Length: 369
Image (tube, rainbow, N blue to C red; front, side):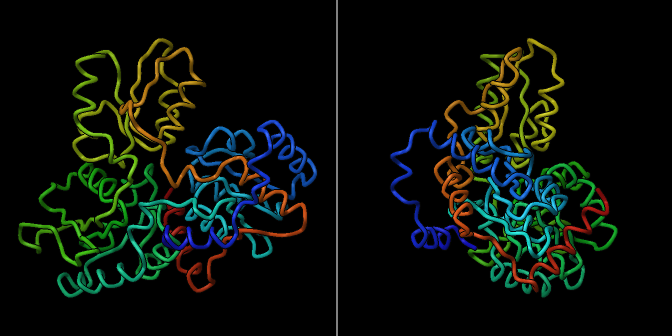
């Protein structure tokens, strides 16, 4: 589902104005009251990138896949109110029982990266790739993708990947086929493939909007086809940020997410998944200094939770992700109060025919993780 579609849906089910008149204290008290009332029947997962005002109420905190897996282990929860984005709620819906209801407090909460690969573009691009390379390609998709894309990948023998297991999954994929199509984040695909020893000149970019390949060499030499998508947050970190920091704070270590561009990852001291970033900071010695290239809410939270270390954003002017930050305290309270009234709003459901193949793609990954 595209972001514009979500905005149209949101206009149909808008937040009542009375929530703007409630104080923070009043809303927090009501959320606690409703959570207590529902008990185990209500489960609230919270993604690392969420605002503090909602993450404080999460029953579990983690990345998207970890949270979906935790949801699948909560059969007593009738309602899962997911503080994350649309594709995360889709995965939770696919991995939970049919009688459990997954709710997204604000339907505008999406992921621009996931929206950069829709199913029509993917099927069109796949057809072009089959004409050029034939049956030599295995598709992989980052879990930050729609259920439809996960389903496409599962249908064609591929699997999902996370930023922490991408290298292992690419290694597996190369035992199956000669080439890999990596969706939808070109940077994670490029950085991971390069770590495996694949040179940049054996990677082509497929630009879905133009329907063409960005590659200057012989297409027969291509080993990895990178979908032209990116994270709008991580792409904002650039080499100038690193160069300036090296001059001003030479003792500061630079730690970035592999969704950053190739040059940024190569110039950093360390790169890794959100979980890797968190564990690195947790295990770092007191007094150490860190500049982190990832989402601002997480950087700020790490700084608050580790006052014995100096932690800053690699980009001091970075803004939080627009769509990742849609869920706020009023929307969380509204969705819970509707449940209290016996009404389910903003339920996320994945069609059975899509879920079947999407779950297959997830299972192929989980078997190897």
